[in-house]
Amino acid sequence: MSEFKTLRGMRDFLPEDARTMIYVEDVARKVARLYGYKEIITPVVESYELLAAKAGDEVRSRMFAFRDLGGRHVALRPEFTASVARLVATTLRNEPKPFRLFCMGSAYRYDEPQRGRYREFWQSDYELVGSSRPEADAEIIMLTDSLMQGAGLKKFTMKVGHVGVIRGILTQERIGEKQQSAIMQLMDKKQYDDAFKLVKNARASEKCLTVLRQLVECSSNDISKMLSRMEKLVENYEKSVAAVENLRQILELVSQSGCKIDATVDAGFARGLEYYTGMIFEPYVPHLDIALGGGGRYDRLVELFGGESTPAVGVAHGIDRIALGMQLKKTALKVEKEKTVMVIPIKEELRSEALKISRMLRDAGVLVEVEVMGRKMAKALEDADRRKMDYAIIVGERELKEGTVVIRDLAKRQQNTVKIDKMADEIR
Figure 1 (cartoon, one colour):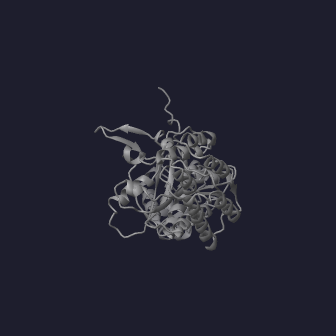
Figure 2 (cartoon, rainbow, N blue to C red; figure 1 turned 135 degrees about the vertical axis):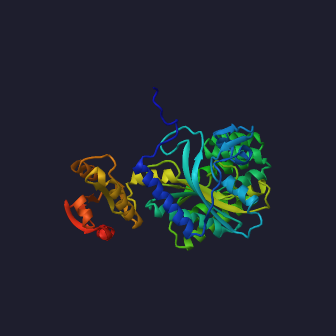
Figure 3 (cartoon, rainbow, N blue to C red; figure 1 turned 60 degrees about the vertical axis):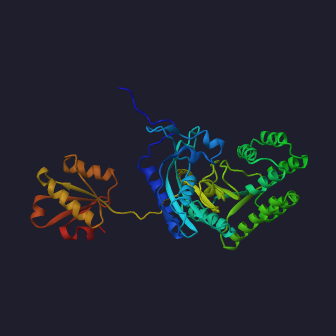
């Protein structure tokens, strides 16, 4: 019989890894509650047209797309924002704004597998819909800081930019939106020579090419100095100047809130998704050269799906990438250790009593496993020890007649007899 393996780019999470993933999910949900984001659940499968509309060529080419049995062109979601925008444009269209929406789950892209990049991955997604003000963008950055801090990744850096800086230049040079998206895609992949060729072929001015070349070389964590330099470079492009000013307002609000983020402003920063219209950002940690998430402003996506003109800003965090960052940093999970118990019947005839006692303990909130392998007492205790259980409850005939059980502390190698109705108190 042939051996079955996971498909390339897919993974099994064994208990220890799954525990870290669930821990990050818990942190993400806690952050959502703290910031007032309401959790929603959207489908894994959506229409291809919806997901492809503004995904960008890179993402479109890597979508898991297929025809369903009804002949419809569908795909597995490569990210969440399109689904949320669809919901806002339809079901939620008449609800009062702003919306603060949160969703979490798996997404799919046919990427080349490598460390931190898989074909099935997990994200926590936060969308703030209805506000065009810089404080909304600042909130999304602050929220990301809260999540990273909550996961114990305190030494993270953030790359920040604004797509309006480059799009403002290209628009003033009369370069069409489709060509702009192709240029931005190449810049996202740092294929600057190819990007500048497209700009040149679009008959942009030499001044435009010079400014773009200078911008992609501009990157600094001295935010004030960097923004002033960008402003100087784009002084002849009105929309680009406005974009730099918008970015300044956002970062000043973050700073004035007391949120201390190690940020680098990157003037040539572009992200692969086409729907971004304003501020964009990505968090990074040392020893991992991929972003742990990414987000930004998208003011025209809801409109594209038939809704009214609706400004929005959001961020998606890679749950598995954050978990990987924690493992690389050896971050301890801040979880309260719960006492675990193995219930062991001395004889087979006492199996039902063992199950009864285990149910009583669970009703009291105690974590219980029952010995179900028919092992002798010594072997059963050895197994409980190997599983790192805290206590064994030994169910014996004589003790049951007296309404008691034996509780053995496996670490101390001590045991005592207690009344059945006092078991949970004794363990706690």
